[in-house]
Image (cartoon, rainbow, N blue to C red):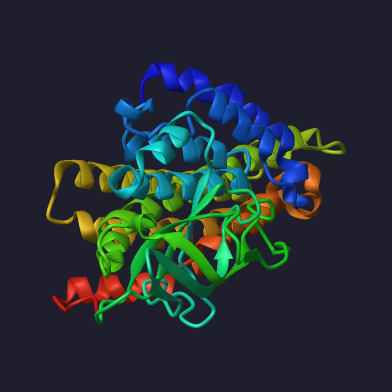
Length: 371
């Protein structure tokens, strides 16, 4: 990440912090996204030849982590946008890529379904040829930015053959596409993660992203590394936020009768130390995962699987400790700890879930096929 982008992200992170409370009440982070678009950061990973910054996954992870320190919902919206952009950069139409690069097009993924749940690669939705068009029918259970994205990278069964999945670029405003209600969840409350239903949505055949039946390979070889690394960056950012808020609270809160602070208690300092260590361990693994991907190392696929599983578990541990060291005050919103405590839980159950990843990792270590 160049110094140029370091300077750009800081005032935008301040905007995310200023709006974090209202976003946690369910508002979509429009103000922060507008600033990201105006600064060129929604086009961070778009190619230079379409007007983007041409940056890589490491740069995207830096931006996502910095935002997550202030607002997990905002970071998750940007995470999904960058994942969708990675697909569009390889398979999408030029005019949409230009709009993304210009900060005028917000993308997201639409993979998870109520019928296949965390096994996101197994779509039950259908695609059928109808002359020069394709008709899509299916249900998605959680689509981040569902009411606000300009397009979805949508998965379905293929038009023909036995492959698991084909991907499509679906405009949010396509006739027959319905966002089914809003999102009222435990955490990440402003990321607008809502169910979406497609009922005979007609698309031009050119809306297909990649070859018919190639969706599974695109998911595993392109989307999964981007999503796992960026999700790990969200977890790392939440952990940084928890450490910062907890340390500030214990150092600034006094026992007036004794003239000491909470931080003067050795047990509390030990908890803060554990939080710092787990955060740094997570960031080290995230960094090594990026290095493995960048160098094409043989262990890169394993690192991709490990990164999200490890970061999700660590974020839960660190935010648990933050609640513990801040005591009863942690239950009040002004301390800022209970929000990251809630947001951190999402990584455990967001597909691929931690349990699915543990199975994949165990299979890889034992020399077994993943599927």
